[in-house]
Amino acid sequence: MTNKAQLKWTTGLQFIGRAGDEETGQGPAVVLDSHDGGSGASPMELLLMGLGGCTAMDVISILQKKRAHVIDFQINLSGERAKEHPRRYTDIHVEYVVYGKGIKPNDVERSIELSEEKYCGARASLNANLTSSYLIVEVEE
Image 1: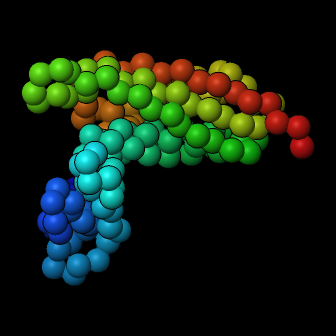
Image 2 (image 1 turned 90 degrees about the vertical axis):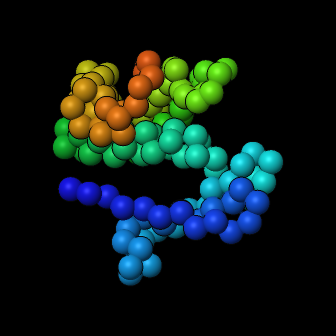
């Protein structure tokens, strides 16, 4: 399977990124920019968001299959970057926040483990030390 994406330069350091086939011009778009430009996320921020999206989809899907009563779900990511170029991420922490009623810690732990070790292709593609934690917020209905 091959994924495709294109970047089109607009001005300064701003680009419009589009997933999918450039021939059809279709697919979701995102704005990338430098911190100075500020009109979009930086490429390194998008890398964190991509990792977050990948593992979020895995974890919520697994929890749903376990019939966990999840009311809300959020992932918070932080990444430490090397001081020298290429300034890659050396350490990334992913915090999973699960809101719900009667959520079992073992179900959350297993869902995260399966995502991190088996399913999340974004995580497997990164050369950084990854740690994770989770928080279950008991919600009254």
